[in-house]
Length: 98
Image (cartoon, rainbow, N blue to C red; front, top):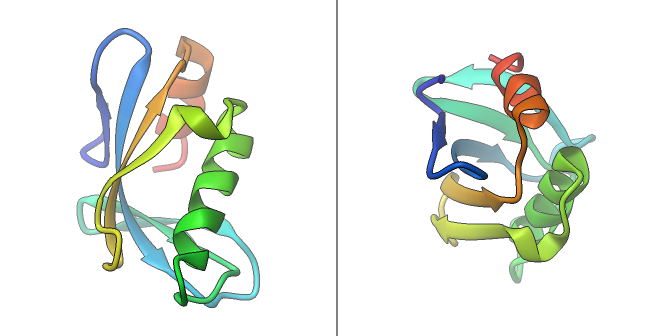
């Protein structure tokens, strides 16, 4: 596993992310230190970026929004996110990002 991607049980992953809010598009960019950088097309106002992050990750990982939890970094660019209900194919897809 990558530094930014850690297994937390059989079907749970913990992601270390560096968020850049207010971007033109929402996308994974590449590594930023020991975190994966993610551009978000949502402003960092009133929790909009955090909500957009949850929606994007749920869609990317093909899991319900309830399976994506923001563990830390509610008001910071450095965030830790837990994703539940993942399989080997998703782990491989995430590992291929960086």
